[in-house]
Image (cartoon, rainbow, N blue to C red; front, side, top):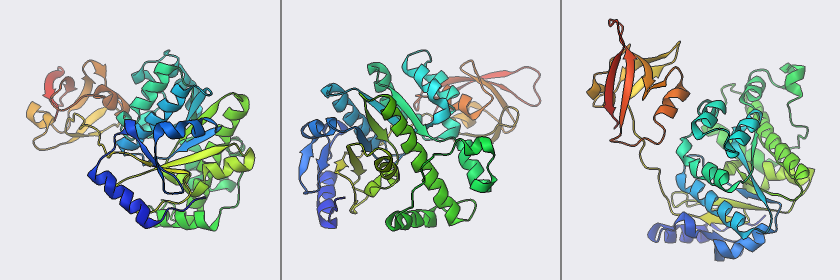
Length: 368
């Protein structure tokens, strides 16, 4: 895999800082340190069976860059493409399919896929990708293994799994390279596992990588005419480790790895076929109520933030929120869906039950 000298990446990132690049006019850095426009690379990418595009989950411009590559490959029409995604878990493939075929609207898809509980990152980060796939009839493949299986391994290890749980494990576990182990040790040092056991943390990372690779390979084997664009965290594919490593072992498809880099990350990234250079862009601020909630048998207010929309509207600790804009509220997902795509200045109507009131109250909030 190619290496990128620190000084080359640093100079290019400094250039980006001075002259930002939009997601629709991406620049790509190849192993020979040449900069390309996206359209000049698309013929090469179109010949691959798999195109990996990394991300930092909370960076909007990474996802806009992903969408730009997806759109360019789709419009080139050299082969039909599907999109494999880390951020939907495998048991919810049928829900994802129903959204793409327009049997479910966006809010029902998010509710039924348990997106907010299982992934949690602001859905607006991924919304352009989901909507593009739906609009253009592009299949999407839920790659991630279930949170329940990961939790069971985290708590019990492999030996403590039931027969049913063991049947859900990916079949292929490969010895981990020393480089990959060192990378994961660094990650672990910053984010220690709740088990306090690095070897179990390592096992879980292998499970994620092997499970996503196995699901991707299954899709390619059953759809021989398709290519697959895999969207996942850069750590699952950098240096060809993780998902690409497992896929090379199982079927060795022609592949390319694209990793985004930011001006705030002036470091070399090894192992990509191209570095994606995208203009830094944040999501617009979301509209906020300004409450902390407890969801024990309903949505109860634990705290009202000072100078918030809720404070100005007179909401109080102990109030139970019954509905928002006539949408019943009992879970965190209900709240997230009720304010999805709302921005500061938008009005919402909240129905609530106060402890000392007989009848529910209705108040209007102007979101912060």
